[in-house]
Length: 275
Length: 275
Image (tube, rainbow over all chains, first blue to last red; front, top):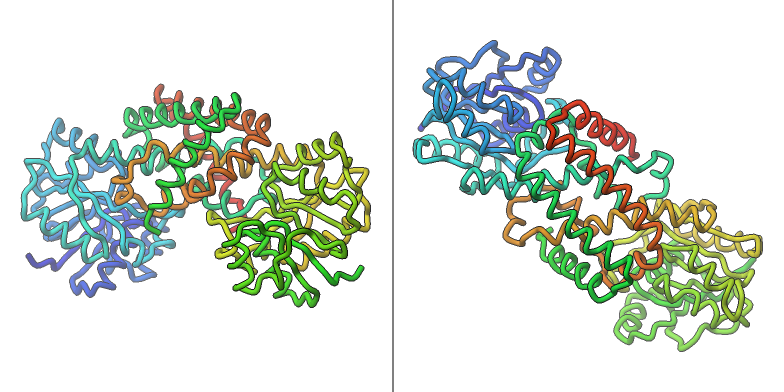
């Protein structure tokens, strides 16, 4: 399937990076952006991420990337219910988007492929867009029985062009896993920073810097993500607190065997993380 | 004060890096290591970190770096109670070392300067020693009224030569601060890794990688650190759990105002962290 015109709804960090990645991969068609924020639109144009900023997705767009916060995706897809192009989103939560569409006025379109590129940065906006942001990352697609295979193939090719490998998961499996691997770490880092005083920054090293990096992420955006995946995030947080209690009890009771066993389990596992 | 002979007790990551840093800074005297582990001794010699491995600190050593785990430092200092050289340690916990010496057989020697270079890595041993490990880091010294000013001056110069800036704190203030800025993040990262399954590694990005890096630290060493600073670490952990509860309650009750305020507090603070 040939793509002559790609539309990106929301030319921020992710949308801008995707446009840049497609360009670097040699995409020769037109890329237009839908971006109500005037400053973001200006930066995206100035940086050459998009060829044009338009008011709405053109009727002849072959592919539409909806790079909006997760809780706005279903609404954007519904706006396009009479459109013919393949579309996908980039949200960190998948189940609620699929459910909202299934229960919504336009239904779950067969041309819509729920997608989540597992990449990001603590900065927002097209000024930080980076054509190499997705290089080596994985993009999870969560198609349902209703999703067209042709649409899945096109979206797979679009994400491969951006430098990612593509994996398929059930929406709920994706959300439960991401609650642990991404949403919970953000919640913990945000919680941890509450008790740090700026006067202590001087007395920190690389461990603190890395551990807290994600606490600098966009608060509005992250509240939306946490809220959309609430049940899975709260379950993950409960599991974390139980594991923390094991460690603090071992510490309080000077139970070296139990404490070191837990630390070894963590360190051994982390040692196998591909760096 | 001129240093002709430096002794390093424990030529691991920290001791080896310190020796390397002194060499790179142009130190022209001899550096000998006391290292009972044969393999570590061999690597330290082979890499040229030390000129020689000796069985005990030579009587004419001008400066002695005790690079042993925090809970062994007081014992090593006591062994040197009749020695004339200035000595310092590198432990992450300072109060219990000072107290153990004050209450111990040799007393708190005026030649001993409690020190903590805030730098490290998740690897151990002289194979990972890095002459630039301390560049730009801060070293906290926690001298007491009993500590000689000459000793403080020499240790300050020794850490400046290794590339660090030096700050002075009370031992208890150091331990309370490090409980928050270093020990708690390690505890949280260790606890978090318990609930991660290796099959999920594939679905992680840079946020996960950075957040969990310190969970790969040496379990035995870290249990010793956490245990030595137990009260401050448990207090910091309680404060963390209270802040996490505020966030999870906001999430469970869909209280966006409270939730976003907490996230903004964290993100704003982290945004001021010097990178």
